[in-house]
Picture 1 (tube, rainbow, N blue to C red):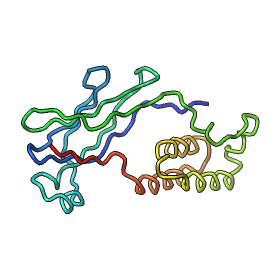
Picture 2: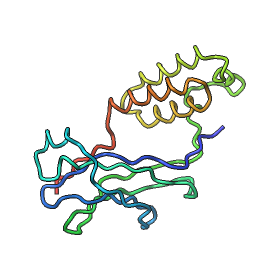
Picture 3: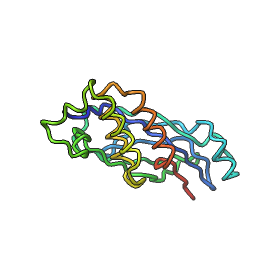
Length: 176
């Protein structure tokens, strides 16, 4: 049982004091996989950082990663209006990772995740939501894996939204 990873969502915000950001590039092996426009409405960012362009400083896009190697390193760089580029994040992905293994459930007992055990699934979702916030990525992977294995998709997805609101790891502030 492996989590199938065909795409990921890259989102956040970026601002610059010197030149307005126009795009975020997703780079793999020195190739630009995708260029994401910096144009998502972010009044929360503008309220904190009253700079030109801050109100529309967000970016969001689904990036296809199917067909890439099993260990992926994506570089995110912002393209500024003055044509300069600034690296803002390096994302490490490992395809084929079975997040459910982190629950330490013996293979012969993994049937507890099936459709006939919703109470166990709810308990696991609640437990995952209480992990320390520095373990955000494993939490998301576990919730996604559980959503694929049990009928509690709605609860798992709600728990993931709550988790992501705790810590915005893809929110970036770039001081150029």
